[in-house]
Image (cartoon, rainbow, N blue to C red; front, side, top):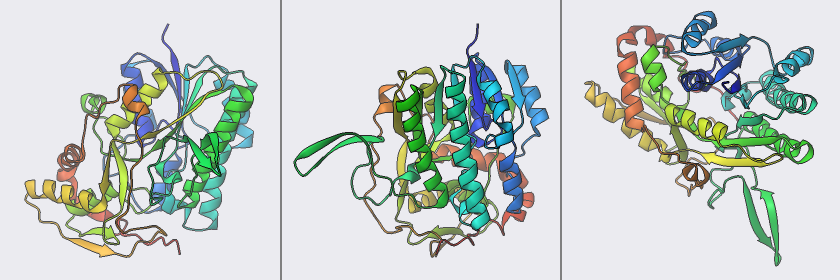
Length: 388
């Protein structure tokens, strides 16, 4: 009998790709989503650059690959908690929580957006943990966190969540590495980290809490086989830097680089993100174990990203300029030491399959025939949401 996986946030960018991989590998999948990402991107007066199907159409494709069930409701709603508990009471091998508001800029728009981010992200995490406790679920929780929980300019190596340190001649053990989030969104993810750690210690829940870098691109073998694309956003709230730059290049707009483009972040292609999630799902921690790792492939500066987008644009006969603009965020944008430790995934067998050039070229090929349509995105890629 096939193992059953619950994917919360199955309609999102990563959730979509993960569902297809799980089904292709023979798992039964139950998906839950409330389509908040679709509504939020529409609120930003934007749309996915790749053509995405309605959920009913996606279901048809998912069910042609394997055994898939779908439920639509909001995880943080008190009146939906019994529904969540009823679903979790099934015998799941793993519960993957991707049902989060994932945008730092979106969380900074207003008090209302801060409220919705905090309530959505924290209450969904708490409800999942309590539902697992109350149903005595033996599933592993796999939760996507973010490398943005850390201060990227902390000036030391960033360990994989847990570390030992010396202070006044004594050594502390099993401490969570200090967090310093850069937005309301990132702060909500820090709180979730501590909630999950508590639940593991209190209730013997087993969990993998993933500190993930910036995920980019659109290719997986399942997406290529079925032609069913995951979403690709480029607006200032939901468009990560690679996707914003690709859209700006395609529509002939200068690439808007924060500061001098010297600051660095960790990056991971979506196919490798899914590979890492599968390693988490298939390598189970012990009961009561809080496991965390840094999930990224390579570190790039923003200028590195610009250079790679321009390299691919040149292959398509495009000459792309860049504009250096003041960062809308309260962040270090000068050159700085940035070295996240990534050992645990490598020990589990992680091997990168895609790089920035691969994915940028893939996106150019997918989107090049829709440039006229993409011109409507020109007004949404320029940052207007300010931290200060």
